[in-house]
Every structure is written in C-alpha cells, then in structure tokens.
Amino acid sequence: MASPPITELTIRARDIFRRVVEEYLESGQPVGSKTLSGDSGINLSSASIRSVLADLESLGLLAAPHTSAGRMPTDAGLRIFVDGMMRVSEPTAEERAQIEARLSESGPVEQALQQTSALLSELSGAAGMVMVPPREQRLAQFSLVALGQGRALAVLVGEDGGVENRVFDMANAVNGAAAGSLEAASNYITSRLAGRTLAEASQAMHAEIAAGKTQLDQASRDLVERGLAVWSKDADARPVLIVRGAANLLDEAAMGDIERVRSLLDDLENKQSVSALLESARDANATRIFIGSENRLFGLSGSSVIASPYRDMEGRVVGVLGVIGPTRLNYARVVPMVDLTARSLGQTLGRSLGKLIA
Image (cartoon, rainbow, N blue to C red):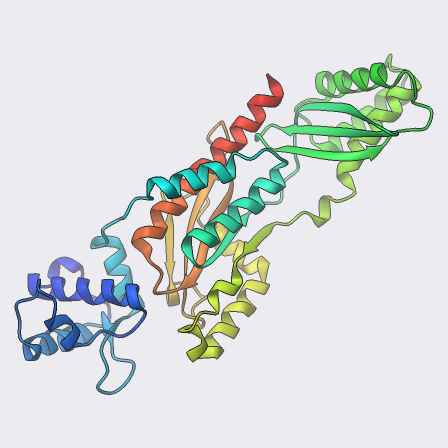
C-alpha cells in the first residue's frame, strides 16, 4: 500500500509523526506513547496518542518492532519525513572550520580524497565514502624538479584540477646538466602535450622522437619518458572507491542485529556495486538520499546513503562523495554537511590547480 502524502495527514497526526521520527533518530529506540505524553508540546492523553500511532502504523508510516513496544518509522515514513518535514541543521562554525582546514592541506589529489572520506566518517559517526570515476587524466601542466641524490619529483596537474606528485630515479647520465635537462623536459611536455591523456602523450612523444622532430637532447628525452611513465605503473592500483570509518557501523545498537551488520559490511566489500549506487547521484542538482529498501544494494542491511557530486573549476562533475549508516542517521545534520564537504573539496581541487599554474 502506497503511503499518503504528508498533506493528507491531520495536523495532530503530522505533529506526532514528526516527534516520533525525531526522537527515534536521536535515540535509535522505538518511541512509545508514554514518552510522547511527557512532551510539553503535545497536549493529548496517552490513549489519544496511542490511537494516532495506530493510525500512522496502518498507513505504513510507523512500525512496532515488538509487541507492546513503541513505534519507529518505516523506510516510507523516513522518506516522507526527509522530503517534507525535516528541519535542516546547518553545519556549525566549528564543523565548517574543521572541513576547510582538513581539505586545505597541501598534497596530491589522492591525499585530499583520503582526507575527505575520513572527515565525513568523523563528522557523521558513520562510514565516509568518496568515489573517483575511472578516467584518463588529461594534462594541463607538467613539471620536473631535481631532489638530489639522483632523484626527481614529477608534478602533474590535470585539466580537472587534480594535482599528483611522483618521485623517480633519474638516468645516471644526467649529472651536471640536470637542471637544464629537467627544465627542457618540463617545457616540452607542457607546451607540446597539454590536453592529451597520458597514453596519448607517450604515443606522441615516441612518434616525435622517432621522426627526429624534437630538439631535446638525449638526457631530456630520457627524462620526458621517465616522467610520463611513472604514472602508468600504478594506474590500475588507484582506488576507485575510498571507504573510511566502517568500524563506526558496529555500534551498540547494531550489535543487536549482527546479521544486518554482516550484510552491510559484505555490501561495502563489493565496491563495484557501491560505486554504481553513488554513480546514480552524479547528475543530481542537490544531495541525494537513499533510504533502506529504496535501493536494492542496501535493502537487506537496512542502511541509508547520503551522497552528493563534487565538481571541478569548470563545474564538471569529478566524482561523488557521501556517507553510509543505519537508517536512523541524523539526516537533518548529515545532509548539509555532505553538501558542504562536496563544495569544499571542489574548491580545494581548484586552488591546487591555480597554485601550480600561477
């Protein structure tokens, strides 16, 4: 039976329903008429409250997990609450500062993504997730910097604002002329190969060298090849889905339903399926909420996912981030926090690109 829209409920039923959901999300426990009758905002007897609770249960908005127990919202009830009744609580100044501080730390793009996933977990008390869609990186800028002791740092800036660093060994033949060779190699890659993927860059480089169309000396040509090749070695090993804080899902309430927890952890192990769920939020204009049985993947484990796309400097979607936890997540707090983190991550990627191009 389809649940009625919130506008079809009486004012009394809406008020009691909202208070049941808010109390349940706060405590994680079913809410009884005795608890509600003690609420100064409800001027009804316990008997009247029980009658309203029974009506809400018959409509499929509430459920009684045990005989003579209180009620808790169903997935359909949570959906009605989230879409039409939730009072959003904006992140506090302290939470905003924490998000901005953590994501402003310098480092490669992988580090920013790892930090984001861990941060979402800490702030939500659930598991944080960041998805990076498989893609071929296109070059915007490339630099080689000597580190001494025969090593160099290769810095790649992608068109999407991502910044990656790799350390590699230089050729033994590159000694006193290292600085000039590094500069020549950097300028060659940036000016001639920008806008191409790494695979395209390598192919074009080999073609030009073979045809004798480059003025690079042997040392610089070797550095070009080494600088580009350093990324291809670990491309397949880069994480597509980063999950942090899965241990947060093993709280005291979860231990009472160990099978549900086991099902959830098994789902998280299947990263391909989780990525597919997050992928469905890529085109969303706002944060999306998947509640319990609404999504096939987490239906059995009774979990919810709150996800939001994050964008690059040009407004293009780079990936999706979010949190996963029990259906009793504090949606009013977590939803705006996920949205803020997505915007902050996009700004961080933009600043990283600006600093290296400047």
